[in-house]
Image (cartoon, rainbow, N blue to C red):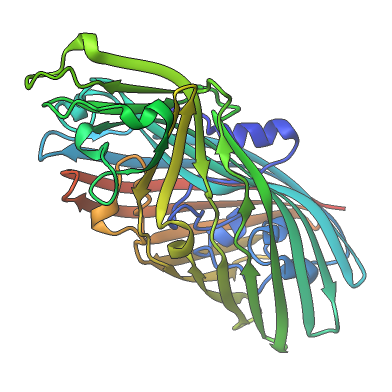
Length: 453
């Protein structure tokens, strides 16, 4: 059990919201109101989570200020088997995330400030599952990626039917990784992963004997930071349009990020390799070299997203909402590119990803059982964007469908409590090239207290 480093860092900054990824690397629902309705959120008032969903829905609120204070929990259950061997469970199995956000509506204009965890992914594996498979050095492997946003939204009610909105987002990313690969991958592309080198690094001969390997490591073990960091910008646009007194249409566009490269300090990473001793036998422990250096993750970006939604007030007590979104993973997740450099020169790697674009369908209902109590339920159905041939046990973002329940309880007109629980059934996938089979399911919840003033 651990606290997600991105969420802790956000909370320390002042206010935060977020969870670990479930639609690829995205959260399936931002805020317990939307999450309880399967993540559907584009065409009705769902609180300050609109900053991540559709900023135009901020303009659907009543005049005044709104403060949201929340905590979220994600419990991923990820298991791995190598070469048909016994299963091992990832140590990254519990993440707690605090949250707080604020917005104010004054007539036709709504504005605010929010800080959100966009998403991420990661696993932690001990050495037992890797015996003779992809970790011949006998050490553990792990990854932890987090992406966050500081968001300044603005919504404007053009007329009683049309509201438009947008936001400017400051985006940052943090990454830790411990990764070992067999020597067969330390060859020039297309058969290997090396895409370029300079200086004496080009003459580095990785021993191809049984047990030969190379290992990249940059991990600070802190809940507050990642060893590699990058910063940039993005933005969102959206609108809502009331088709009639009971039906509202909503749409949103989230731009691709413009993140700078994620980088460690000059000696923030290490590269360890078995060096060819010129003898065709097993690895000689005297020919294992480890050296510090700088790791750069090049051109890592978050994808653009298109979304369209509708909400229908079917009866005074029953609302139905449905969204469709398309997440353009293919453009940004073709390769995971890294460069390791030190005084000896540099070596660049490209881990093939070849993700597909992802379609997500979300449907939810909200039923006002009493003047104080609202009950919610929903489902989110999506495809898995990761091909079998490039699924990696360090980044198994393969979960597809989610089933959700939630409720809201109003203590009085000014304060309420909202809760949601989400369950993602197990998805199993095998990469035949790595002889790796991963199974992944999730249980999560979000709890939020809101005050309007």
